Image (spheres, rainbow, N blue to C red):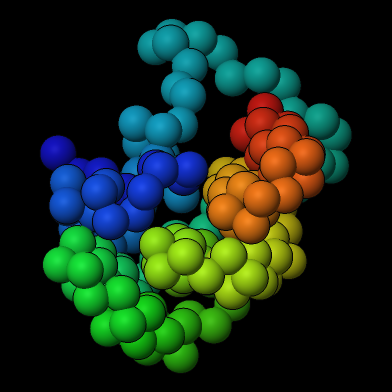
Length: 168
C-alpha cells in the first residue's frame, strides 16, 4: 500500500510508514486515492457549470516523484537536512509544483522551523490555483506552522480555509 504524508501529524513518525509515491498519480491530498472522495459506482457525475473550467490537479513528474520518495526515506531516518536538500533538487526540476513546496514545508515543520514551513505553505498556496486538493494541503501546512508557533487562533482560521478548499 502506498501512502503520503498526513497533514497535521508528526512528519518523522509518519515517514517511517510511507512508501514511494507513484510517478504521475500521487494519492491522498495530492490526487486520486484514499484521501479523495469518490462517487459510488453508477452515480452520474454532477452537472458542470456552463463554461466552468475543470479543476486543475497537480501531479509529480517521474524525476520529482523519485526525489520526493528519496526525501521521505531520508526524513524517516531523521536526516531532515538531506531530505530538504533532495526536495530542493526536485524544486529545480518543477519549481512551480505546489506539491513539492508542501513536502519541503513538512520537512521544515519536522525541524521545528515554523517560519519556513509557513513560507513554504504560502508559496504552495500561491501556486495551487485551481487545485482544491493542493490548496487544502497548503492551508493545513500553514495551520500546522501557526500552531507550532503558538498562534492557535490563526491556525484555526487556516484549518477552516483547508476544510473549505477540500469541500470544493
